[in-house]
Image (cartoon, rainbow, N blue to C red):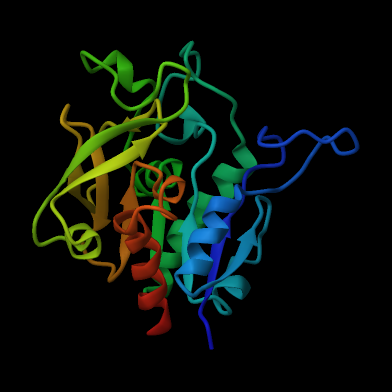
Length: 241
């Protein structure tokens, strides 16, 4: 049987679609779903507000914590008045932070954390974020001038889960983030960086398959086998659970 891969959805107020009949919605870009299906998984969405995480995790084989809006700075002791902060969804924050701890308790469910997801992983374990990474680097290579996508290189550390999954130590990635890890949680290790030193991938030091990446592999995964490898590897690991 194909493994079931749970993906966290956007919050009810995140603006990825416009509908005149509904003010609130839970959704996710189809590119995530497509990548999971190509890998051989069955996608299942977990919307914010869900409290029955133990029941859900008992029925799924892998988890992806997806990208999205900024995490509320109160989670990591940040500055909630920073002018570059976007919208918050504390309902989504609560779900995803709890999900990290449930996955650590389970120990047998592989999990992938994409963009905001990697920031959730870090803050759930006690790390902090740059509210706006452009404040701390000379040139912002992580987001396009239009506020969306930009390509840049990433160097992956050898003998890490990230290098095993990606099959290369130098890759090209698609990024669209304005925040980044500042202080790394003590239970994580860095497995990839950008040319400017920004942390691009982390993994848990003891959990068997818990990988966070700062870029968006789903954007190019259909055409780029290197990026599809992330979803393939997660599904392959999920088969073992």
